[in-house]
Length: 367
Image (cartoon, one colour):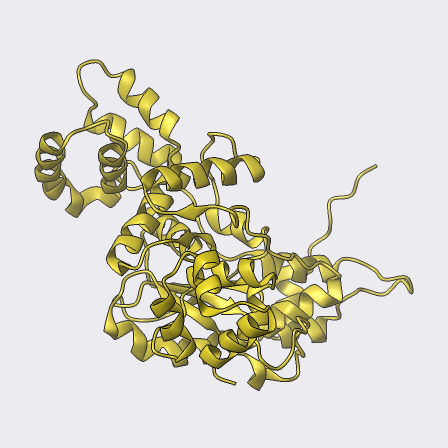
């Protein structure tokens, strides 16, 4: 069944007229009608709002066949992604989409199988599912909620990818031309972020990953895509650099903040100098005149930005290999390893010899 017809059927099953459904979701009747006729593309924020009104999970809306969340690792053809959003809206990205999905499908099923073997599954829970984004203040509020629920406080996030993997988001890397930056989407109820491994700028990678997180979890009551992109950037900057922290840095510099201070902020918080400048403008710490003045200076700095204030993080997906090592070194009830070297090699596309070499070291044991 087509998604538009699916929405119409679910609305009718819920006993709602188009007008009632429009009232509850906050869309116009004509807007709902376009969805049901398949004339408007379904975005993640639309899906989130529909699911709330219909009292269903987003996956239950988009999956017309089954609501079973357990993937069959042997059925690689079953992998698909929905609600794909790009880091930057460029037509050139589309040419990679099917190729990327095919590339990551094996990795996706392998980590799902490994989690099943280890009985170590993490189901993603959206920490801001009840917040609707209409303006910048809503973004700041959402960040405060996330940082509180995820116990981040005002501290730097030292490893963004590690944090998100431990919340249930699957993150994969692909090697593509620089024109491709990233995209995000869903495989059933599993959120996925795909990053370009060719990007060497760690600060940009951190920002990009959080930009994609915004696409996955924020409910935008906005139809202007360019505005949504700006708000996703706003979110990424706010997650990396909490507003109180930036205010403190500026308040402590009575004679104006220096390049050295900006470099220091970058090296601690893993956020580019340009993103710091935009964050200061967004929060009203600097005005437009100051922004334009700084921009002129930044245009002179940026060619050499990677040579100063460098952030020393790594930002690589780690969960798969962490589980692999754990499985090889953990015994089951029969006293055998949960994961054999042969199975580990199959899952990781490595040789048994490489598996033994990489994961064969002794464990540190407690007395």
